[in-house]
Every structure is written in structure tokens, then in C-alpha cells.
Length: 196
Image (tube, rainbow, N blue to C red; front, side):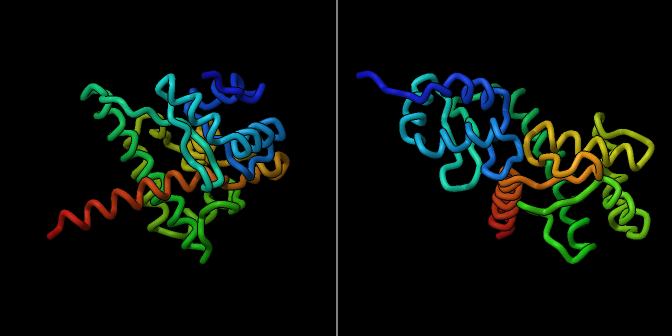
């Protein structure tokens, strides 16, 4: 049995195997076209990729990504847990920033590193959360503004935010940010279940 896949399948595979997300609301026209291709051919691509042990995830979420469903060595699991802790702390910091402005730091939210920095100067809780992030080696930067810029760089590299306006250095939170929010809500639910 032969599966007829879109001509962009290799490009989709190359992009998603790097751990990236394809978000519906990206400003990048090439990535937006790839997102549409996946959206319009989801079942075919899901079947095609699962044959090589990659699982296309994200149907009806506004973003797509790959997951693998095989048993992993303990070292890999331990590294993933450490990474999850870091994302929890980053998400907590960003959500606290949004709350400090009476806004929700989520999909569609537009911000700049300077906005975050200015709020840190007047909000002690936000400053404390930013300082806590220094415990991670890649965020162990003394100058708060540089640490914030590094956080935004990580978010952009991981395809959770996209540049909105290069001159103003404004960034837009993408649909893929929902992946982080869902991850955290699952962890919170598990913790609450263990309290009994």
C-alpha cells in the first residue's frame, strides 16, 4: 500500500525533527504554508510519519509537533525533567509579568524585552522570579535585561514566540505556547491528585 504525501513532506519532517513547532499564527510565510499543508493533510502525514516512529501531534490546537513513543533511558528522562523545571520557572515568570499588567501572557500577546525589564524594576515579585532563573546555566547572567533577552531568544529558538516588529523589538506569542501551558497544567493536576 502506497501513501501519497504532499511534496513538502521532507521539509515538514526536517523542521519538526529539530524539535520545532509549526504554528498557525507565525509571521513566517514559509512556515505558515507548511502549517497549512499539515492541517490539510493531517491524517495522511500522521500515517506516513508514524511508520518511522514519529507521531504528528497537535490536531486542532493551532500548532503541530513530533512526539516519540518509545521507552527512554533514565538519563534521558532525567534531562527532560530538568528541562521541564526550567520551562515551569520561565512560564511562571512570564505569567507573573502578564498578571502585573492585568493581561494574559498567552497566544497573541505582544511584548518586548524592554516592557518586561521595566516591570521588573517596579515589581519585587517579578524581580525575584527573574533572579531565580539564574540557577539555570544558560540564564546565569548578571544583568537583568540580558537575562530577559536570553529568555526571549530561547522562546524564539523553540518557536514559542515570533518577531512582530524588528524595529521596536516586539514579539508575538504563538499558538505553540499552548504546549507549555498544557504541560504545566498537567503537572499541576498530577500534584493535586497526589495530595489525598
